[in-house]
Amino acid sequence: MTRNFGCFAAVSFAGLIGCGQQEPAVAPLAPPPAVTVAAPPPVIEAKKEEPKPALLTAEHKLKVYQGGWAASNAKDFAKLQAQWAEDARSETLDMGPPAVGPSAITEHGARAFATAFPDGTAETQLTLLNNNQVFGVVLLRGTQTGPLQSPTGTVPPTGKKIGLLAAHLLELNDAGKAVKESMAYDGGTLAGQLGLLPAPHRKALEAGWADKPVVVATGGETEKANLAAFNAGVVGFNKHDAAAALGAAADDIVFAEMTAPADRVGKKEAVKGIEEMFKAFPDVKLEVASAWPAGDYVVATGTWSGTNTGDVPGMKLKKTGKSVSVHFIEVDRFVGGKTKNIWLFSNGAAAAAQLGLLPPKTPELKGKEPAAHKPAAEPKPVVAAKPAAEPKPVVAAKPAAEPKPTPSKPAVTAPAAKPTPAK
Image (tube, rainbow, N blue to C red; front, side):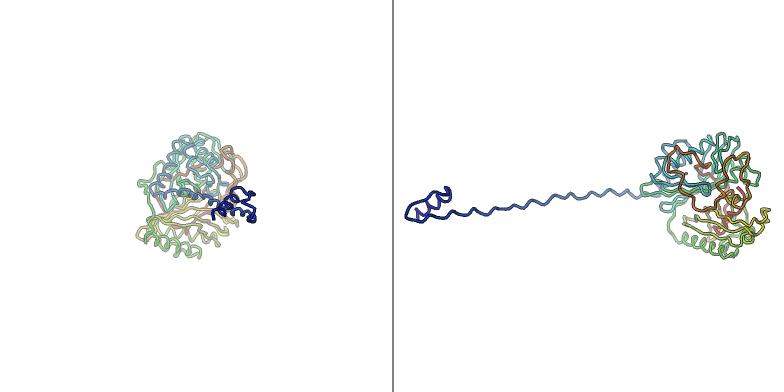
């Protein structure tokens, strides 16, 4: 056993060395199989998810909105520009193509307004919030001592004061940046106050509303009922049923249509105005794009269109046989389920131009054919691709509002056909 062990030892450690002549040589042992050690699995780092922005409170959203107007009034254009998302879009209804991007929006809006009205201010009269939608009625005031860019060309300084109400809609994203802006005001009123058009128009407002409500939507039953009443009025209007269109109107309703020189007060006057419209525009209709409530208010946007085949006695206008289409923003105030106020904002100058009621050019408004001749179809998103380098388009980048909170009838009455010429 000892010798045999020695032979195994020799084979094992010396390979070819034998252990004696008597014993046959022992075949060398095969090498042990190689041991394969599996490579450790690659370490996969857990993918870090981008932290979601904290949900903004209603207070924060209102701060963003109010901060934008404060920056505009302070002429702090850098701060104002920083509040816009990179792909933000801004338009003034029926006053040319929209501006796209923070730089273009700021240049074509706030800066352009400040250039024409160096002392200009914008004061919110009503502020409503529903989720990420903010709406304001804004009073714009100022003295035109600088060049004003309009759809028909550059208006030289007139030295005259303006004071008019504008509707302003702003949509925020979850990070609190502004992504979409829509403004509406009457170009005829602006031109009239500047002494550029002789047509009847609202006089320049010097003071704002006594009360300046700020309302946040709750989603309550009252809000739902108000929205339902508004929608029912639109259905009645499109059926050309004046009674149904004003079914929720209070007897003392005040209908403030910004294209008209004065408000219609009382349900009878409101009904009279609608019936006159149905006769002048037999195919008139409203197309509501959006509508949402906040407290006692309902905000709506859409298009008013029709063909003028009848006279408009209230405006001393003869039929033109032409079609018109304009965008509008409307806000209605309800009290106890009844519509007490309606504010209707649209560009009457655009409607008048489509009906052929405005001269193509005037000495004061030099330039190309009024952009208003084009129907209220969605404005082509051409303007803002280029930053502030682009020429400043429309008059006011920031809306303003006429003082008296005189409201009026629901979207049911979007008088886009009236020839009175809104970031």
